[in-house]
Amino acid sequence: MPSLHFDVIIAGCGPTGAMLAAELRLHDVRVLVLEKETEPASYVRIVGLHIRSIELMAMRGLLERILERGRRRPAGAYFAAIDKPAPEGLASAYAYLLGIPQPVIVRLLEEHAIALGAQVRHGCAVTGVAQDDDGVTVELAGGERLRSRYLVGCDGGRSTVRKLLGVAFPGEPSRNETLMGEMEAAAPQEEIAAKVTELRETDRRFSLTPAGVGVYRVVIPTAGVSDRATPPTLEDFRRQLRAVAGTDFGVHSPRWLSRFGDATRLAERYRVGRVLLAGDAAHIHPPIGGQGLNLGVQDAVNLGWKLAAQVRGWAPETLLDTYHAERHPVAEAVLDNTRAQMELLSTGPGPRAVRRLLTELMDIEEVNRRLTEKISAIGIRYDLGDGPDLLGRRMPDLDLKQGNLYGLLHRGRGLLLDRTERLTAGGWSDRVDHLADPTAALDAPCVLLRPDGHVAWVGDDQRDLDAHLSRWFGEPSD
Image (cartoon, rainbow, N blue to C red; front, side):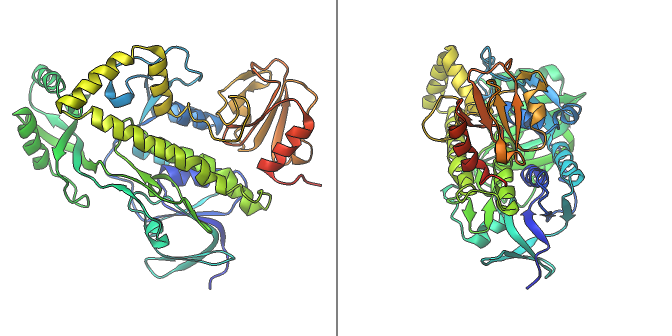
């Protein structure tokens, strides 16, 4: 058996795996990331970072470099592409959608992880996993065997790690798929715009959106499911365009072509002993609402500090189990809202009638706000027991006397934000920072923030605080 060379091995260096590696390195965990692909994806799909993910990037000091490569868009029309503006007064300093090419965000997160000391190996496919009381043995395609204390599968919807674990992945298989790509079109822009407007009256899934001079991003729903391992061809797009629109608009010179299905599945368990799952390895769903990448990155930030605490030896006994307890219900809710959105995009008279009704209801501010908070993940409240409404929720960025709140979370530590100026982090000061600021715009005397920015305690009593510090950050240091 090989010796333990790493604390954590991560299978998959997509956004989830790269973010998790960086989170672990903030706590000096020895991390190896194994990515089976040797080169980045050839297609350049634009993905959207929603409000909560943008907040997490700000918490880790990543937002400025991401903003340089992304494009801000208004925070509205999230839910089933119903064209409504964002509600007023969203409780975030980052109330926008950030569009960015997926290869760019993957590269930025991987560079961030490497800069923090993570090792990344490309062209390494995991083929075997065996665990015992002391660690996990990972076998690679070439026969090499590696040993670590923990393994996290961030290796996508067809996760090898999940399959090797034997974790069930119940849900619905793909019934239909969508072609997506970027290509040039010979037809006049006015003709294309008029036809798209006509078709979207009955099918909101169809679009040809300008993506440059003479270039269009094409999205075409199709009936049935093809072999996902076989990439679509330009002729597939032309044929489907003729079937749907009566013309192929003279499309040519594709930049990239892809297809995705509408399968919806959720892993029964996120942890089996020393092996965990995150991102698409744990949950898949249609991309409507643009939540997939965001859900995975948020998994990583929830898991990172907990797994690091386990490795470093200060984790309370049940801390690592809170990863599944908190994130599994969040994924269930995302799967449900994507199911609902797909129904609202159906072309039958019943779904169209429900869509018209919901469009009307979204003129009610509270309805619009609830759906926006759901898609952007700022409405999440983890069940941390009885307490004020703030308990379990994420803390928005605040202006403080020492700058802004998120600027104090770059190191991935807990934070005691104290308006009373009489509390202390005491024996937990090696894991929890303390800021006494009576001027903080906070509707509470004091809050204890976890490294993921969620509120773990609200109050003003030192003894009660100490109990919650023990609950989340283990025993105090001597």
